Image (cartoon, rainbow, N blue to C red; front, top):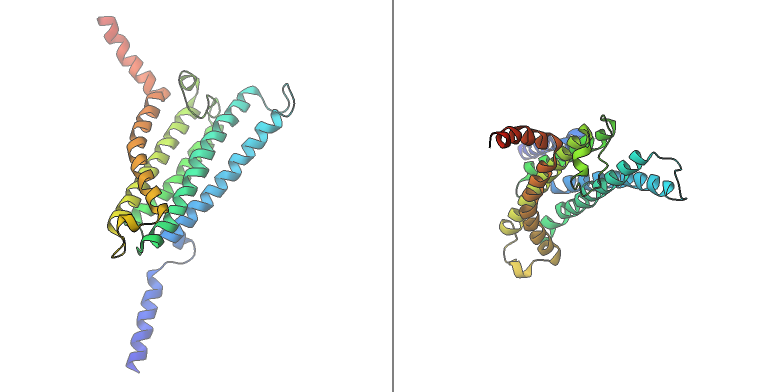
Length: 244
């Protein structure tokens, strides 16, 4: 009788360890749940970018102006590229990595489960900033998704919002890369050497190192293209040049 009671108590306690409903997703630390959220976010971004692509193709269906103002057309072109690359493609790959890497190397979960959760929830905030730039004075960025100067210096607050959103996306990628590297190097099953590791894990190990190497440089580049930073630097350097 006592054995049955103890078993029931342990089952009851175990049921309370895992949140249910919306808390399961908000506080998720399971790599499969987080991978699923990445894939859902990627699919929603794919739909949003696809709608922008339809608007672009609708305008280009015949020569001349059809439905969109030239400024808004350029905004759609820029935002389509940003949303597809940073909102659809990259989160989809990270979602598959969250799902597959622990399973393929015999790990119970990712190395840093809470950081894994945090790196995902940065994405919706960045997406709100990115899509919210359409509502900013002057509209969304319209200088091309590569964000090359001098077009990036001619935008309004929408460009600053987009650059901050890309900073957040870069931070999410860096945290995800650190998580993948530590998981692969330290949490492989006994007997699984690097040479016995599946090719998918190898590709992600190399990609994670590349992301950590590239993302800080890319974020510095974005910071230099920020309109606010450029104005601050110019206002600081002009008096120095005048004195010299």
